[in-house]
Length: 201
Image 1 (cartoon, rainbow, N blue to C red):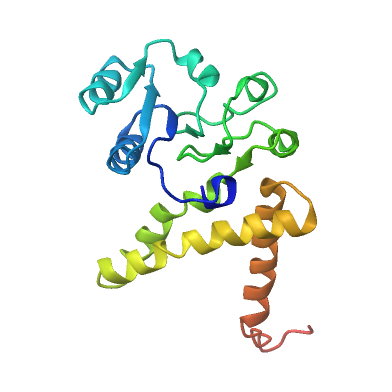
Image 2 (cartoon, rainbow, N blue to C red):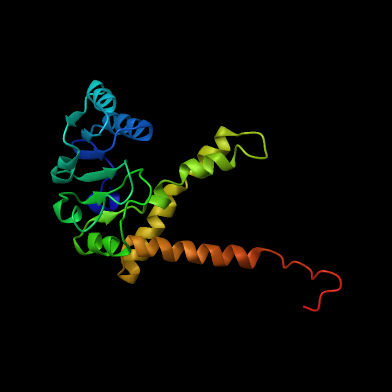
């Protein structure tokens, strides 16, 4: 929001949420508390009832969500919903949602960039679940430590955005580049394994 609108306030903004499952329900609740107008859709009647009870405007036709004039479009349903057929219909400045694999193809990230839509790459902003899980395995769970780590997602998204701006590429490509750099850096930090006894190399 700060990058696209020079403010991180959602007050008065319209957010279109595609899919209103468990994660999207939390997302909708937070955005409502922040003063946003929420337009939501889902294929599930129960999900639509939940959205309506929360004070969201509900679209019974799931396909109509792409045509909603909004500041933020949040894909929170199935993957591949951002594609050559749907991207031209978007009327938003930001795409940021909880669905996995939102882009159908690599070219769709470039098309969002060409259209001036700021895309928050899904595997960057959705990493909170995996981060939290990592604190539940093999050690006593610490909510404070997990939350502190999750809050760094903000900085990770900002790094992707700044990389995209600096290099003149889409945020989708920038996220891949930042991830590759991180992988290389981690590999360099790992100690080399000593060769097995009797090995020739």
